[in-house]
Amino acid sequence: MNTNRDPLKPRHFASDNYAGICPEAWTAMAEANTRHEVSYGDDTWTQKASDLLREVFETDCEVYFVFNGTSANSLSLATLCQSYHSVLCHELSHIETSECGAPEFFANGSKILVLPGAEGKVTPAGIEHAAHRRNDIHYPKPRVLSLTQATEVGTIYSVAELHALTATARGCGLRVHMDGARFANAVARLNVPPKEITWKAGVDVLCFGGSKNGLAVGEAVVFFDRELAREFDYRCKQGGQLASKMRFLSAPWVGLLKDGAWLRHARHSNAMAQRLEAGLRGLAGVRITYPVESNAVFVTLPAAVEKQLYQRGWKFYTGVITGAESRLMCSWDTTPEDVDAFVADLRELTA
Picture 1 (cartoon, rainbow, N blue to C red):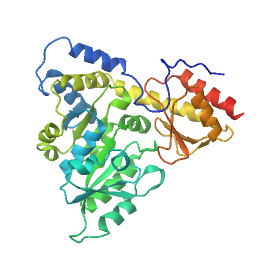
Picture 2 (cartoon, one colour; picture 1 turned 135 degrees about the vertical axis):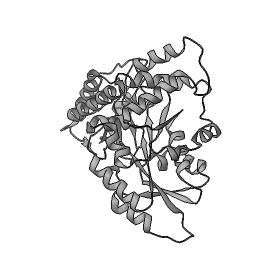
Picture 3 (tube, one colour; picture 1 turned 180 degrees about the vertical axis):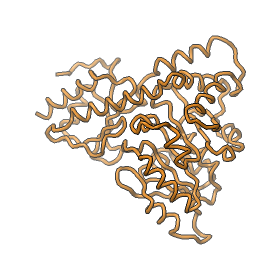
Picture 4 (tube, one colour; picture 1 turned 30 degrees about the horizontal axis):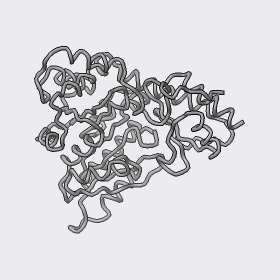
């Protein structure tokens, strides 16, 4: 029985944001700290990180580094929209539920229109319905489809699904934005080149998450259509996202990208979620509520068992999607021993 977890040194399952900085990012940041560099993004580290992202996506994309996912999503959507436009997204998407109205704020009032869909995914039919529901001047004109990859419930859009969605979006006159806070986990799951689920699939701009995959802070906004990035640097400045010492946002990306650590870490966190799912299967009163396709496991637990897990020092969130579900997130540094210890406690409590 694991009743004495060290409160200062545990790895928990509440969020992949709990994890520290991966060694590759830490080393690169330390290297960037050894000498003076030009400020505001005109440094060698930012150039190198941008070039590495172009290599990853195999295209001449435009790249910007910002502090967090909220700013990445909000500023990129604001670039795609006028104030009288609307953004279509899943009803569980982060831009709808967890960004405090920032997308609407930075776009000067563009409206979020939510779509239903099983397992956190929108459908072509849902897009068609929302885009053609009204076309009069009194209604906010649909302009952007926002897709979350991996979704808020940890599921993954396949290559075929993405092509179907973006084709529908194009037919409705919509641009396509991708919230990729856990994009690396999606690439790891699908085992395809990143281009296959971004620009080749019809995505215009990707918000590529780093902080959930081993960075301390910082996301990359990747425009596959360079024309759409026109004056985005001014948006970043106005939105408080132009770091004076930009190298400390971009250098960790160099560490993450140059030898493929970003994909190794994502594969590892996915594998730990699979291990966790396997351990939870068949436990009394435990039900896995969504397919485990990335680094998230959603379960319902008996209320008394949940309380006892908290008492034993485990941390995880309940009610992220509904009031009954608990979300168990695996991280780049989750170990098999962490998973097995959690499963052992849960098995004992549900026996």
